[in-house]
Length: 476
Ligand code: BES
Ligand code: MN
Ligand code: ZN
Image (cartoon, rainbow, N blue to C red):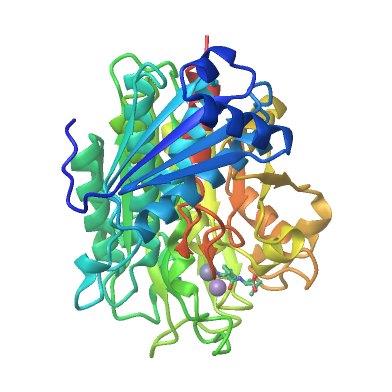
């Protein structure tokens, strides 16, 4: 790659292992002394400014590779990204001196993930895009293969963010399906879109019920990546809640406030699309299927009302007690559909409940599941590695008792407390295979940027799922 300079400004980063004496020898005496002094004071960086050039030396404790420390290096990468964009620098060079590959990777990752802005709807959107366009890493410091993997993961995360950031004025269920077709073509996975007629033929009463108040038809999208030499005989199935906007339906959400961020309600689906993209583009030897039931949830003329009874595609009847508990209704049909693949494991992601936010805040996603404890642990570790942390909650039968209905097999509403767990029990009813549920209500959307997790859609789930797939299927 060749850099195209447009500003004349340049920026370099050296990640320098403080125990690396050889590296000290190769620099000027003054600089070496300065870095050593700063290091003694406990500072972690030295900035050297000269005409048109900024050089950062980060002083790295090469022995600490814990997840929290790697997250710190992502944050440092994001700071350099912000400085570069502040100075309208279009390329940054990163090299490391005696530093573990994982730190170089994390630093570059934080830079690249932070370098995102959703500017589509500004009149002069292009000019509002970040100035930083290129990141160079000497491949002796991070192998070409890792660099490519990082590049596609960043693209996949950005794709997921953009899908979340798109308002429903553009991203209807059908448009969303078109976007999945586009992503499939780009990354190399197949996509089949079921339209309303086919959804009716499949008797997906949950998805059709939620869609009743809308003038835009629902879709059900099936993505599949099946490499010739897959390590898994039975597929991994990913399911994403695709509510393109959640008004609450007739159990209308109050606004201002709780409705204002509800274009994020397809965040689970966006995570599945991003994960499919990353897996396919990086050609992981894993058979993965992605299912996305999509609709908006609106209070239009024929909208479902409380006490309506819907029939899910497996025949289970549901008394709708609150039309704002719509995610579980469309997920039920998707979880039933997943059964036909005889899956190795099913993971669903959904911006499902406010209760998940109240339980762990915005720092973690709430997880429940019936999968083997090895798999639960692999997911928990994967989440920590990429710093998309998870917290596991129980699926006790008491939470299912809350869902008993006088007139139907279940109702869609539990008691006021621990709503994320009654929601989990509701979903569990439709699973006859090892299953993990990830409630990302607190993590899919940022009201304000958190380091490299930019404002708006965060793309949460993409890197976590990818890491999980690598760790579960691609090791050994
Ligand atoms: N999409 C919401 C959950 C949500 C809330 C996501 C905040 C992101 C941020 C979901 O459809 C919903 O409305 N859940 C209700 C369920 C309740 C009516 C049982 C909730 O959690 O309040
Ligand atoms: Mn809702
Ligand atoms: Zn919702």
